[in-house]
Length: 122
Image 1 (cartoon, rainbow, N blue to C red):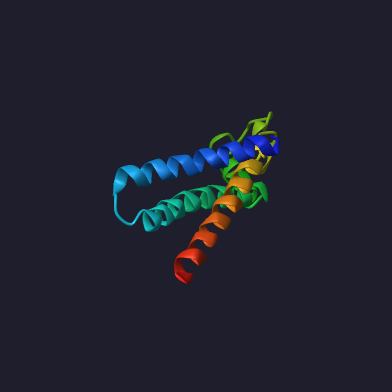
Image 2 (cartoon, rainbow, N blue to C red):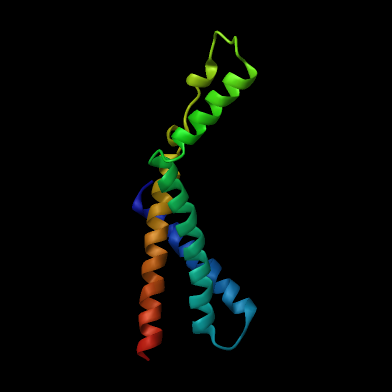
């Protein structure tokens, strides 16, 4: 993905947040905008960190162990042993989605921090 699509997705997130704020309460729009932006940034951060951990191979050993345990317990004489060839979670990560999540997470958190600095400096 190029930077234009990342920017358009960022603008779409801001428009969605602004729409939610306008329909929620008419008073304290700035505080509500910061609150809703926090929830969006938290959601993006959580999903990004899960992808980051899975991409790093943290769950690979766990999944491999469960597959081996299942094979030993239920298929003792299986000569094919297809569980060894199944892809691990770190091999199934969509790198394009990972990049989108990373850029959106950073952008939303930077905007959130800037708005918090503005709010507390006033």
